[in-house]
Image (cartoon, rainbow, N blue to C red):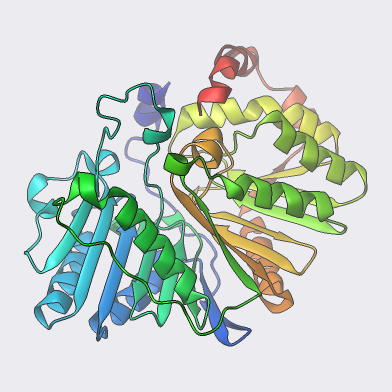
Length: 387
């Protein structure tokens, strides 16, 4: 199926899609800036790195060795050369196709390459198989970036994703998330003499912002619980955008129950994602969801890679976790939960903008799909627990 999909897409160029200008929202003592266009995000991330005075922490899943990837590498090396502490984490499996030379850094940059296989002789220990799917940048403990964007030229203009920039007390939790991952894996990936990364306790915390981290090595998976609690409390609307949607039964039931009690439940997905198997597996839930009154919208002509939700005009999450088993109970992920009406309203505006480039799937259209589609969905159903 993947080969057929690649053949069908050959020569096709992505089309432009509507986006919103990066918007600042006051949240407590800091601000949250939302990004829906990659180039805007990369410009601000690079500006922050180039202005760093003390420390730069960068963690990413995919890091392409193209123009965008090179600009980030150069900015990090230049920061280290002027005396800034620079630490980098990337996932080796996600970057297998990246040329080895790009992944070599000067000694002034501390690099933790999360391994392709980290279980060692403990091949039976499932807690050691999760990928590092997080995307974090923290500069000088003053500004932090987190969201769905990987680093690469295609993501700058061709993919529709969502990221946010945080200032104020909320940044401290992003620093702590990076440090905890670094310290958990430093002895295996770096020298045994490598000292742990120490993080000072911030003088204050922001009650409107909570950072949730999935940590498979510790069997900690709070992001799924965060979603379920918010969905179960919803009274007016649940608007979710996800690149890959392969939920478990409890997640589907929570969304259906919300729709049946009158909540406006809408799900925005890519019409065609970059993983055709994930698309086909996710469709197995469509009939039940449509019959329950859940609206399913399909984003056209570009890959929507965002992992966001906003509920009741007061609750929002932006992060790295998809609604699938790999994200919810497998990988290292990070989502930020916001309790703020102004930010929720901005996220609703983003969602409405995306709907202008989407087609809503109707129950009649779904029931009229061809035999090939029905057959493919049926034979792929057993893969749901794996993805």
